[in-house]
Image 1 (cartoon, rainbow, N blue to C red):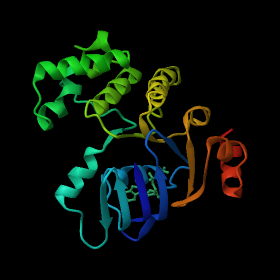
Image 2: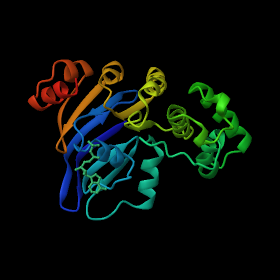
Image 3: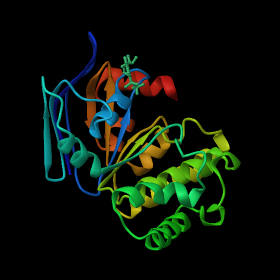
Image 4: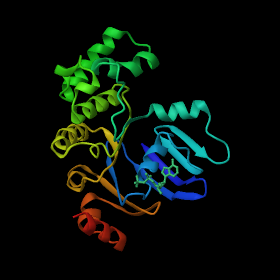
Length: 245
Ligand code: ADP
């Protein structure tokens, strides 16, 4: 589903991703873990071209985009973005739109489907994430967990092949983390392909088919959740896991 080859990313002179190679199969859940500043968010943002890599290539579905001197074309960018849905740390809902209006907005504009049909689809998704009874509320009257579950439904409305999560629970009060993780776990059970940046190690252990440990812009270690989280082979991984326990 995704193949990332020799990806590099610099911000001015600062190299933040170096020779990144990995792949994600259809239906797989891949968790990116590692210390703050190791490049996890930048890597995730590269996958839907919120950041433009300096070198290497990304293949998602049947689309491959290579990076170099020239910026990717609008068409390539659009096609690659169509494969993925992104959920951010801060929920980024439209403040002046209700829950249901938030989630039908993008497909209404992009997919040119009938509004009634989108509302039906949207309501089904809101039921799935436990937000149906809040469909007519505005974001500022919702808890962080409710906002994030709405943001997940909004990303799912575009029927992405891959869901990308950037620390989806790190802005939440501890008592609201579980409700969001449960929604993501349900998606995993349904076979949704996902790449998740997370600090929630027990969640990663439960959900991930593959864990990538990043440090200093490199993927230092890659393997099953059991391998990387319980029997890490690299010193950097061991140190990181000891530190966060
Ligand atoms: P992580 O998600 O693992 O915490 P990030 O991908 O956010 O790491 O950051 C990796 C490195 O890139 C850090 O040194 C960070 O300061 C730097 N960085 C991230 N975004 C930018 C940016 N827009 N401009 C300059 N430097 C950035």
